[in-house]
Image (tube, rainbow, N blue to C red; front, side):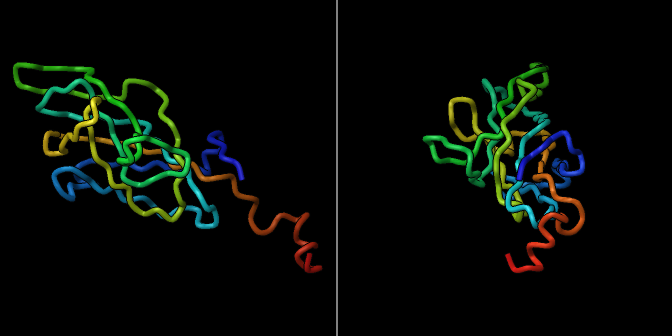
Length: 166
């Protein structure tokens, strides 16, 4: 199976904000994922947009998920980094800091297609925990890419082999 982002029929997008994905504790939020193409064993997930509004300034914020994809490694063994943000607007008088992704492309990670929730947490760029309670607001958009599926039913060239028991 191959992943082809040119085929929009195999992609789903997930939007998360404080209304759709509330705090489970001070440090994590849970983002519900839709049921997908259950015949596909895996799905590629990537963070395509992220905006964080905070009352606290830091050098940058890393958005991480607790789920462990098969194509990710980090020596800290503390989740998977989905994206790195940096301050793109600051209003120091009111202590208002706007963080956004600091690059256009984020890696796509291979997770099981039956994954129903992502548990997100934040770290500063030096690896210390950063609480969601420091956030005034947050917004995420995730892209789920499923492998291309064959046309409806079994592909004709294999139908005869199934009938013959091959």
